[in-house]
Length: 214
Ligand code: PRP
View 1 (spheres, rainbow, N blue to C red):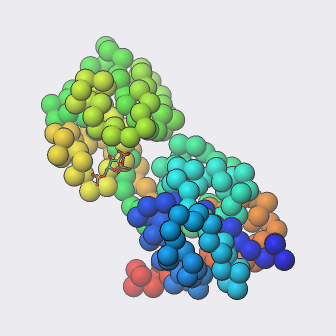
View 2: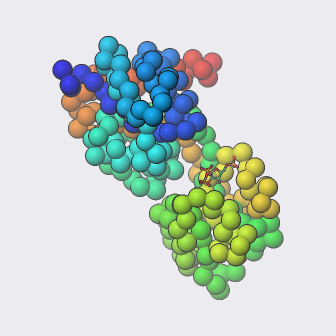
């Protein structure tokens, strides 16, 4: 039965590889996916699972719209896009933080509009509106650290993992906003109709996470 298969949106890249590793340890291996070529959809019908790789920032939309029953997305994406999904589990991968960063000698001048470059305009707006700071958002799609270096912005709101990108570009964390990690999310109707299977995956991943933290 089609209803038997759980569709999983995996974030393409290193995080996705680690997430798949967890699914695999939880009993949801998919040998086809381990030799992918240019294929995008991989199924293990015996295990009742079908995976597809999507851009990390698109996982939430696939799950919200029901193209995927479940997926794994960073808390940064969930806070930026606020998709209407259930957040089932912190899988403990992809740990980093959201921060305001700036050139080393930066001092905020409250008389001026602060120019903020970011991939996360909603996160940035929420942060600055919480204390009434007047800002101009400069929405970029990558290499955010370039913006203050070239004078395009005063600060950036971005993800910091190791801090290497900031250090190597003479920038530093000005303020940490919140911690981030990857979350298992579920489509709301799927969670109602395929609850047993989704719950089994959730419990399996929680057990793998627990074993790895021992
Ligand atoms: C992310 C983020 C920072 C960097 C932080 O960029 O936007 O640039 O990683 O990691 P670090 O603290 O370990 O240096 P990503 O690699 O996703 O590329 P991007 O520039 O395309 O956003």
